[in-house]
Amino acid sequence: MSSLKKNHCCVFSDDERMVLEYLSDKKYHSGVQLGSALNKSRTTIMNYMKKLSDSGLLINKVIGRGYQLQIVPEFYDRRILLKRPNLSFFDTVDSTNQFLLEQSDVSDGTVVLTDFQSHGRGRRGRDFLSSYGTQIMFSYATNFKEIGEINGLSIVIGIAVVKALESVGINNVQIKWPNDLYINGQKVGGILVETSCSKKGVYTVIGVGINVVRDFLFLVDLSKLDREIGAIDISKHGISRSEMVLLLCEYIDKYIANFKRVGLQPYIETYNNYDAFAGSNVRIITNERMIEGVNGGINATGAIILYTQEGKLVEVVAGDVSLRKADIT
Image (tube, rainbow, N blue to C red):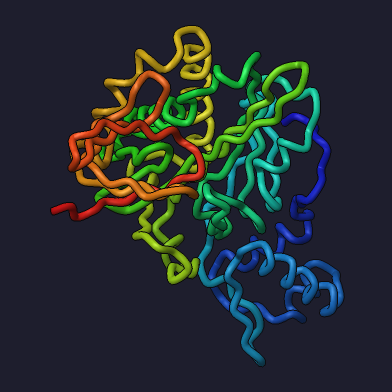
């Protein structure tokens, strides 16, 4: 794995991983037992438990019985991840996007993968809910010459992700403009594109987050959300999280390379076929206004086309916007 500046992140120590191994049987283990096994004091074990809990692992503590890992996550296989060049893995990080944005001289295709984000973010400043071991969360770095070249990038990444999922038999994923992933009306993932412009060009970071273990729905506070959330159980399709990460990166590699050559135009029809709200009455809310109309798909710049009740055609560019279905009479 590649070496990046390790700000705002951590990798569990060998001792902390041993604690997780002991707790993976879902039985209770006392601090004394764990301390004896690791040759550590009870205070040290308590500190380990706090760090693991702060990292999104759900650990029960019962006086007289000890500690129990309530849900055992599927841990990443480092041997598989090592097959991807320029990939760095951390158990926890504030935000994979922010982490990469703070780097300099990062080559195309550099990936930062984590199992837990303490300050992950989505679009419109929303928090990105995270629980250890139940999602795929990574950020991917690439470079463009000019800002106009990235128009429609999030849409192409969405298509790349859907195609990767389809390749393992997950065939019912749709895209909600401009960059959410949906199954049966439930959001299962999202994409966040952020940029940093300089004389060298446009440094672009693409964040991808997908809920891939059903336990995710039991581990996060869904009351914080204003939409239905779901998860894809990729294990039912015979692929591990580690393998899925590499597959997603391979598809993103391919689609970005082609996007840089040909732009968004060849992907418009494909996107419109995946559009979760195709032909639906929708409401778009921006900082300045609210627009209602029939979703007419996207144009060559990635803007969504709305046909209003007044017979007008309105184009809304992706940005700080919110899109919802609407009942228009």
